[in-house]
Image (cartoon, rainbow, N blue to C red):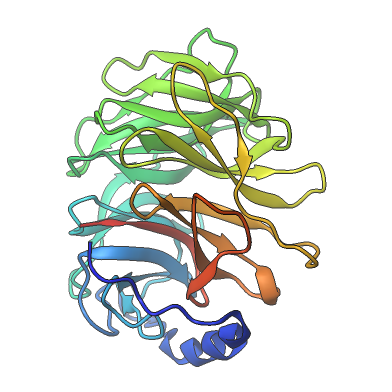
Length: 323
């Protein structure tokens, strides 16, 4: 893993975010092909101005590599090989799973489109994630008030919509692959807004089983994402608390869910929500926070608790990956 970016002080958040505004270009005539600084092999991808941006480990967080210019981008995820990013594209009635190379020079391509013939009754896609081999994408498909996991090959072939089965789970949230590349962990529940359990699904057979019937004593539901650590030993998730905000929680993964720890806390600052966790190695979690009044990416070591350290300013829906 390359050297970590320099870490900026929290007092500089507002100035850094303002300094990044000039990077937010929108090309009304272009469909993709980006601009910005450096190259990418490992680091963050995120959304700014509804375009996909990327910052490599060795890059400047104030000068991200812009991968798209068409707008309409949501929830990007970088392939483990670092070569491409998958994301959801929404514009009017158009909903597509798309991919774009991390070079900043290529055009986005449609992997899978929401049409009546390809996915009858489906209304939305969310939360794409690559398998460890970078050749399969698992994502969440919405139909009415329920959501199911689905998979498709990165080349657009082999779409499979998984049945939620007879385990009392009507909806699934974002999935995260275990290192074996055959199973994923997702939040599950009675509806897409009540994801209060953890479910393990085999993406080869589609068989699911409830891994944990609760999220610990302090987290009520998962807000956006569960994230399995690269070695498969731990899970981080953004849990909504009884106070209505979200924090990053951490727990060991074994035969059952281990003791759940609240990883992020903001002493003396009210109304702060931390969300969208990703792992940077096995000992550090990165996440999105609105601390200080703006959305920025932070990191925190799993041996501690607190507010974390600012890494990338002015970002939404971040994901860490590549190599």
